[in-house]
Image 1: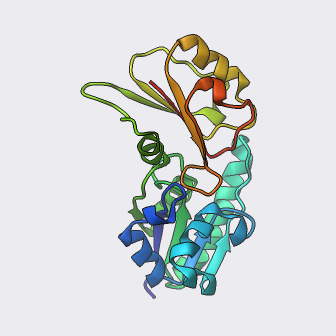
Image 2 (image 1 turned 90 degrees about the horizontal axis):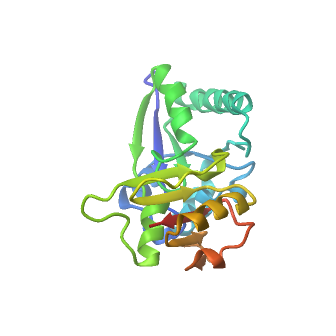
Length: 226
């Protein structure tokens, strides 16, 4: 029996209208969907897709329940567990669509699953999505970079310290809990800081200045430092 294909599908940052035609087509044509969260309803990616592809509710949905932790051992164990679950469908000939917020190539859980299953010989296809970086800069009405300006993308939640030293634009993604420490770094850098929480969602909040950003912010917050 021919094995199924694993598709990593980016669903964009939050606005359902930013789903690509290719993402919609791939979701509609396949019957097994993998999402983050203990249940589909907990998955932001699932909720985004459901507004455009309501028939997703009738498909087989794998809830991966990825833990919000920095412990690499726990994460590796969970990635292995999820990969084994997905491979059970693939080996039976079924394709699996793994939904991921933004783009699958940028700080995505899918990248770990892809790495494991590609080493096991499964075919993988990636459907790019609109990244939160592009969506936030568009919503703020600013450019990410001009001419020869460099761009630095940092996973703020995984960093104990944030350094803003070089010329260019810094993008800080996925903070965790309190951001008081790196707000001090941003303040001392003397640069212009803007941010958006939950870009494209109903609870979106735009912060036009560093002083407006609270110390506790949602995980889905992106800072643009210019």
